[in-house]
Length: 321
Image (cartoon, rainbow, N blue to C red; front, side):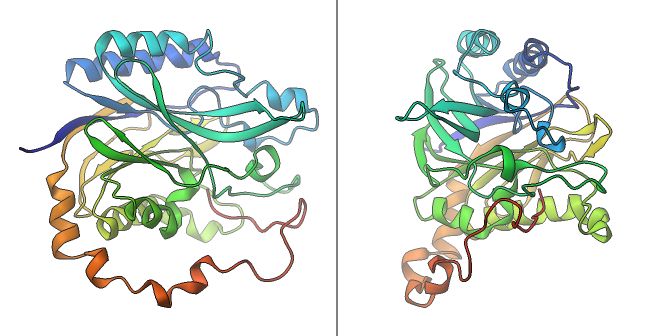
């Protein structure tokens, strides 16, 4: 019997620095209501969906930074989204900045995504592994990208979860550019990979690549889908946000690497596709049969430790978002 799931990619337009979380949640609820009318079982929201993309500003006061982080999930501002989703019987992926205590009365800060089931329960959590950007202020740049300063590298790896009748994985933004992200989930049988992004159109370190931003965005997701026989749902926060242009083109990609649905605007927009998980087997049995064709004895360099000094604040190389 075929296993299918109707998934909505719920792109958000820009979120201003002074826009409240409650306002962002109301916008997501409107998309969720549309998704319910269109028969969705699962809705995917962007990375850092509750606030503006705050790493574009250099802030020295940690309290100013922490104002963008969530100390609990759900919290009173986000609870209405959980409630409406539960009433509609729809699950969702949500990206946000997570502030969580450690065992020594300190705090950890992660760029995080959660997977919420149709009953409103959090069934999965992922913390971003491949943090782009830099550590220190770059005064000559039109905007900053200080994820390396404000977040720690995720410590949960790339797990998958049995949810929505499928094997589901998650990642965030820059993770999509690294083939290891998809392969680790693919080796665990991922049939659906969910990811949100906030990606600038302009790349200060390599402005010649600005015209390639949308192309590269799709290229890596389509390759990840095809090479691992999985559906991929990539969802943007898009548009001109606080003077920074963010790419859109949120999309749903089949295991063949084909884009089957894509947003046409840079605003709040929902696109929907019905994902047939039999198509994952179509690729894995006939093209990328891991058990038959992989030769991991030759892949040692992929997991070898980094050579040279460990990256430290002030010395990191910037990577694209």
